[in-house]
Image (cartoon, rainbow, N blue to C red; front, side, top):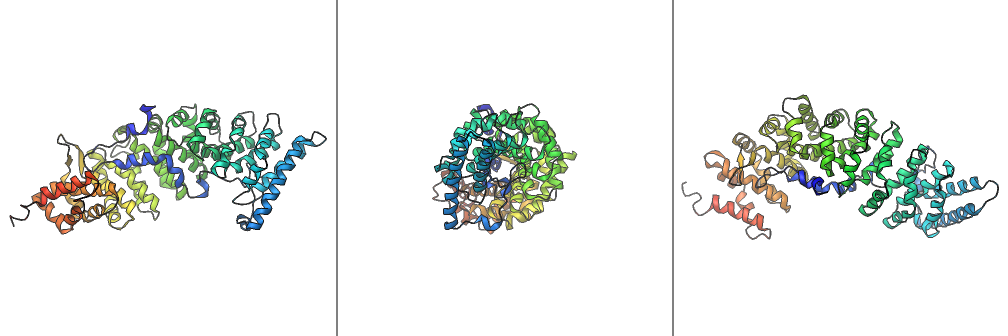
Length: 519
């Protein structure tokens, strides 16, 4: 799959100076983005308190925190419930089916009772083989649903508890099929989503057992709850690092049309889950990125950004847009054409995010702009002449460090064109002079002083542009006025050879023994 790896199409046009490694970093981080899902709606593993049918015990807040004494009691009740289930399965007399369902329901109720269910007690009592038995084909839907629900909450536990579901996976996957009722299929998808959320090892097991195609087919209808659960499970299943699953998913017949339809028409909760699928498709697979770029995906993402105020939706939508823009030069050269409506729309929604009070939105929007700014001269001029520049200049001096670093990539990319024959980028003097006159140099020198290697390199690269490119040799004076010499001399004996050579080279070249003699 080397040809489809994300590294093969990261746009990094200016490697020797202010480059676009922000896109590269984001793509590398795509496999761990699930860890950033802090909201309960989009966390990697979810406890099921209310089932697909709407049935369930919804505990009050007092039940979420369990004291030690209550915990011991809950464990004892759970062990007893597993024993009751064992007896119910063995019973063959009149009312056997209802007896099994009642025993399953009691175990499910206990496993749904608190934020930290008694999974360990259930496993020690031998719950898994019994629940697998209850998933056998021909069982009534009520029994299948309760068994799958129990397995869902066991899978939401600790890693070793999730791995205990291995014997149940083939049957959970089998019940995703069209012959299953929607509530049963959805509950099985939920359980599998929790398993996939545990990590790469279990994702690979699920993929090898064929979980992806039936989950993908569950996204095709307009069944809100079912599609939402399937999309969430799929986003866990394809999130890498191998791009093969993402490529396989986008090739499923009807999947692309379903994604576009749900992005266009769905409520925000469903659109959020679908957008996370697009995040992983566009972050991991060249093929999927190409397919999405040629569709209406960018237009729909822009529309969602423009009309929604839901942070849970805006984050994956913005990240998806950024991945697509970073995907390949085709996007910026043939889709984001200056003067076209879609391009104006992209800039407007990015400005909206830059103005937001939400830190994540500012950071993501800056990253997307850095990719556009790494494109053609026309794209650089488009951003340079927009309302984005004053916002970016303010963020460079006032925002938290991670946002300032992203902003620095945008401003740096606005000042250069792709590398010349000497390995140095060509300057856009008008942009450089204007940005420096508006006070951006101090922000870049602050980055040089940081302990972050990437940020320090970016700051040194911009200082090189100023020293080389400001008219009348004013660059040296400007850098000196901002204590830039002191910032560079910190690297005189730095352990990072690249930074040491870069800083020492600039000091020697522009502030050597002849510096200031003319004055």
